[in-house]
Length: 227
Image 1 (tube, rainbow, N blue to C red):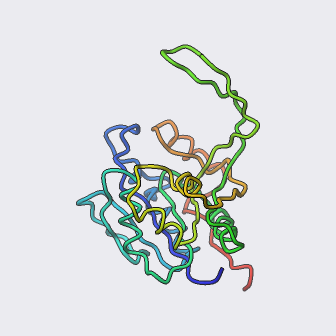
Image 2: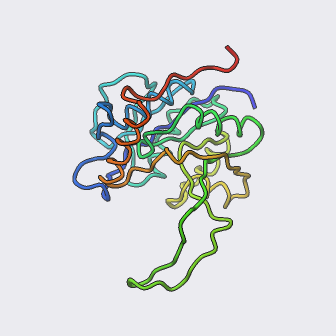
Image 3: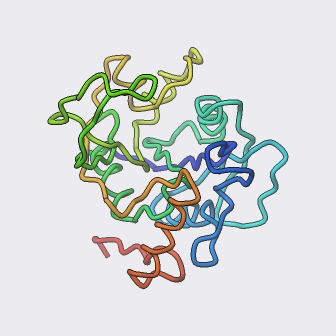
């Protein structure tokens, strides 16, 4: 598949599990998490649409459009889609909750779509035992052989992503929505260092990872293998 790649950075969440502050504006090594995500998508994609909470200003650059999000992620995604040019071939969806995503991860999911998939998601194996709990009691242990943890960024054929959102479906994760509609979503190897920041404790882990790997100024530069 040929054509331009655009990114939608979903940064309109209320971060209720994080606390009183909006986690996407928390700083890692002096850089807001949302700015880190914008930087990496700017390097790896042809255009970037940033989705922010209503009334939130963006004083940075590196984006082609800034739009207001909705009450849930699906509405925010559709607001972002409306700002992506119709001739875009692939759309990468990223979020500041995974602030340590790498250029290589974006390249991997985009590459999988270029190779013919309708969507691509990075995954990592589940190392711990997975159990279902009700009222504080374990009621079932789940087999984990075919279970994985799914990360962002993810990538999708632009026409397919627009089509599955055309009838404004209920809030649902994008790759799951594609699968429900009969589209093929493939996996690529995820990155255990691409932590999902949900709580202040997760943020502390992300800060430790940044400094332990010597990354004090944001993600490393992207190098085009064809150069």
